[in-house]
Image (cartoon, rainbow, N blue to C red; front, side, top):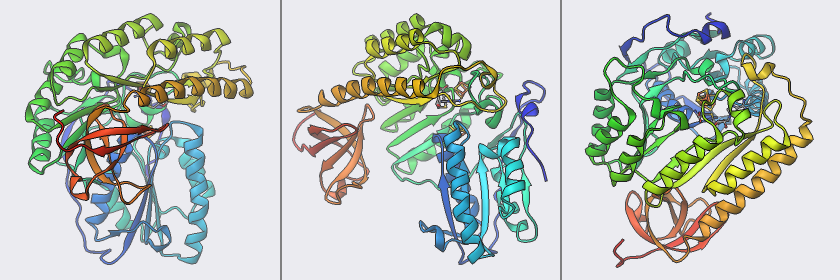
Length: 471
Ligand code: SAH
Ligand code: SF4
Ligand code: F3S
């Protein structure tokens, strides 16, 4: 048993990053058995689940979307806010009942939650029926752990700075769009955030390895890739060679996959050169997720974000000016400890100036072990909820307005599948990441097609394929 330790998780710079070759663990032990996986959290976790799926399929399991049918249930969890945590423990309640009816069922929990010592303590005390607990640093051990869990409970979570594994096998969800990790972890330590504790230090992959993976995806026919990292624009800062995200993006773009995206950008490390690359490379999509967190320079300082309101606005202005048609979305936290109405007005003020295409908004959630969780917070929760409500009204009105601007225009859409709402339609995304439900033949799936936008809804657009229009 290896238990997590939040103090160890905070350490930086003691161990050198090791670049290791991943070894696949193959066995026929579970042939004919089924697995069910549920993923919470960010794109990083979604992509990790593609690795988890490859690991369990290597043991002989096949997937099911019905939890009750499964012989193995894996929960890939997120620790970013308390409600993510509550959802997982709620789900565990259901699994407890299932396990009573089916004692041979294996239950595994991985991802960011088990990287917190309090979570593993809770599992040990209250959920002894959980068979396997693994973390973000050892997905590659999961195969062996599942095999051994037949005999005993397996808990292996490492609070280490972390290594970089190459040659990782993924069972990718899509044959059209793919995730590519360019870096792991985060060193920014924003005072409210648990990620630097759950994911370890910033470790960039070598550029040559990333380019090889992208070339391979191109040869498999992928139409879109998204470069992944908590702070993609800090890419390379930890490498010996001098390579910036702008250089990487330019090199990835040259490989010629039709669409290249990246997420998430931190305003702090966003250079003019990056803006220039996004503006000039046709296949780098004009869409940037640029988390604001707060519009108040005083709160930004307390958050450890290292930019001010005016610096953010200046960066935003440059992006809008230099990248034609760019869409920008954001993340905003309300109710950070000590946030006053005046601070909140600064946030609304930035939203007004930026007119975001969309925003994810959250009420501050104290995370154990982070500096902000110890800051004095005397804003009543009712006031925080009311602020969130006001913010959402404003955010939604701008995103609605942006959607309306598309009506009557012809845009290119990468079609990704049959629409969930209407089996007679297909769905896809514009270059600016707007979801569109399209009247078009099924053979458009996997293709980039011109679409005339006929209607704008709150969170999506409707359109029809436009055959003879040049776009
Ligand atoms: N690396 C990204 C953020 C990843 S977490 C960045 O730096 O922008 C996704 C979002 O969750 C954050 O942008 C933030 O808005 C929100 N978040 C993180 N910690 C939070 C907390 N303790 N309470 C509420 N929201 C939080
Ligand atoms: Fe969290 Fe800040 Fe790192 Fe983003 S940059 S993952 S918010 S610590
Ligand atoms: Fe959640 Fe971990 Fe991502 S905490 S947001 S799954 S990095």
